[in-house]
Length: 304
Length: 304
Image (cartoon, rainbow over all chains, first blue to last red; front, side):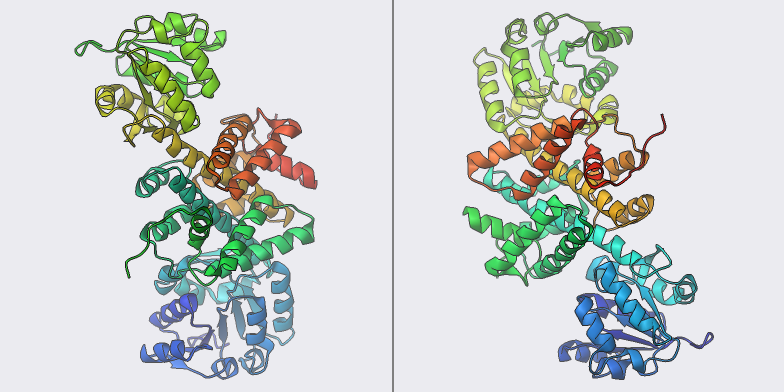
């Protein structure tokens, strides 16, 4: 890519994370073309002044950088290599930034396919949520060729407050992300279990939140998700189905390694129970609603 | 008790928490008599200038306030009501502050026995660890009669930076503490599972600590306990056996309520596996050592 001009960027996936990332890139002056399967997301991005294209291939045509912010490995593969796939339309020497949470093996397979075309691949899973995505303040758990990392630094810095360079090979970033997801998923399930247990004990839940967030039982997820329970608001900031997927990847990885992860495996079952109860698309704090329903307990309900 | 003079205080249990609490009380000018089953702890307290007595009854004779900082409900009952028990030796109108982690039912039973003698009982479980105990900066999750709470405020404030008054009846504080212990236990087990999983993936563990503590997978316990794993130092700050006990109480409470706590139940099994492997008296981060041993992984080992 041209070392002097701003790289042309395509962002595929304008969901809660990708949308904010595309905005953050535009704010730093990068030319960005967005693409999403949702016509509504595309119309919104266009209304904000962004360029849009109807397919990943169209968005990526001539792009120096392709940011793929979809849900999983299968969608990332479809964006890159499927019908109307983006990869072969990119500028020679272009770089793919793959942000979906994926197993390290899937990352290595995709990176190989990208590199076979003479382009490069950075493993760049993200953490931080929609608010920080829109502010350009994500955390990126990155890995890949050091020279590519260095060259893309302005692009990464536009999206993230913390860019970790965790190793020279794609897959290492993904492994760090899976360790984070193991903990995050367990902490959400534990927060929901603890709050409904507190309800079963007849405790004042707002007071429980106050005491726990000032005590050794606190977690980032407890602090972030329990307000959804207190407000009875299960509109999805991050959905139950994300954690059936991510803890499912942890479970697969554990089986592959012959390594037991009993706590994460139990948390996965809690998310599966919640999805089975019909709450899969709701906020992941709905694990509390599932448990309360099971036990006949009332939790706060948001006023309509 | 005399409203003008400093109350005479007996502290039963001079372990990692009680010792610091007794020191904090003395620092604020309260006359304190200490008692412990360990002659070594008694000698140390005496060498620090504290008064000691050979039995709970001797220490409590004429005391206005009895602070009981032992491991569980059975020990608290023995201190109060056993041979050489403290309760009947206390000044009329004295107050028992019971700090052990106990089931709310056990607290209610003990409070009734104390109140039957015309004395009062505050349910005052503590959180924060030995360092904060010595600094007088614990968290107390208290409950009991409001007038007793108000009268004892100078004593509570000498030991704690945060004194929560959570309700008018003993047992409420204990219930809050058990919610905290459910979360704390799960978070320790999850931290150990995640770090050994990271080791199985070949990741740089110091880097994992750095990334996770800056990410959504963080917890108070992850931040506090993982350094023990990185240093290979399993000398007990808080022992595995504490959590087989505390998560055991959570399990008992859940059965009593017909309320399922699958994540906490799994964490309890992890602590039991660790205790069964011979690490019960080691630091609770030894759950990582148990998992690493099982899977043939090496973790850092402290230099002798």
